[in-house]
Amino acid sequence: MLCDCHIHMVLDGADWRAAIRRHANGPENRWIRSVLEAYRSLGVTYLRDGGDRWGVGKRARELAPEYGITYRTPLAPLCLEGHYGGFIGTKYANLREYAALVAQARTEGADFIKIMISGLMDFDRCGVLTEEGLPPALIGQLVHIAHQEGFPVMAHANGARTVEAAAAAGVDSVEHGAYLDKDALAAMAEAGTVWVPTLSTIGNLLGKGRFDETAVGRILESAQENLRSFAAMGGQIAPGTDAGAWAVPHGSLTEYDLLRQALGAGAQTIWEQGAARIREIF
Image 1: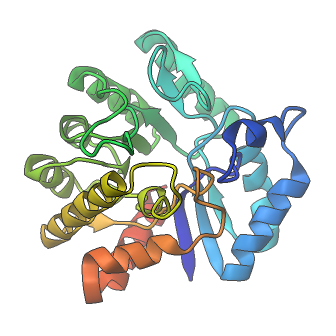
Image 2: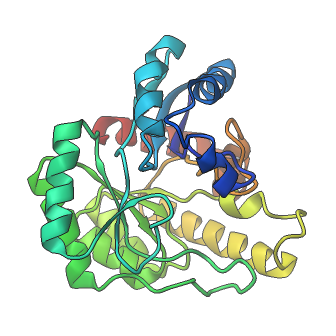
């Protein structure tokens, strides 16, 4: 049975603005059903959404049982004002507002909390992020508050120190995780943090001509090298495509191929164990 531990039902892999407009008058059931049917046809039985503030993931969770799919969503991801994530998530200005949003998520039936704590990769420049991560002390407080409410925590996180801080705080999963070093990998392995590397967001760019091909290739190689190191430490890795991101359509299976390239013969055993852990936690 297949799974995708990181998707965005609200997005379509082509044009994020147009995709969001599709749901301007409320979640578009026809779109959601077509995507769920595509996953069902592939044998996917578990989906974990990265969230949106328009209720699209929530509606997908309601419909998913009709398709034999277990669906988990944080409702909207939470992002600090002035930092990455505001295009899709709910903003907070301070910890008081964040705590209120976490409590609201409990009332509204979120399955977990997703925090946005770094920028994105600059796909034209290997090693460069669009913005650095939040301060480690703040990251620790964000994770702690969510855990106090009984939620597991998914973190959009890139950069070694950002991921190290999240792992030290006990974050349950790290999404993306670009540009890690030995200390960050060791922190995740020691904490039992599941890494969902979303290699498809990198590998699917190759040959598209949108970004510098050499830079994209180096970014992918860096991520796959880190995955090998993490697996050697006994770290847990789960497959997630970030479906809906540019060049990553819903139902893409490229993540499995990219994980095989990185991890070799033992890849399936590794990702099955990681996926089982995601299902257990989330």
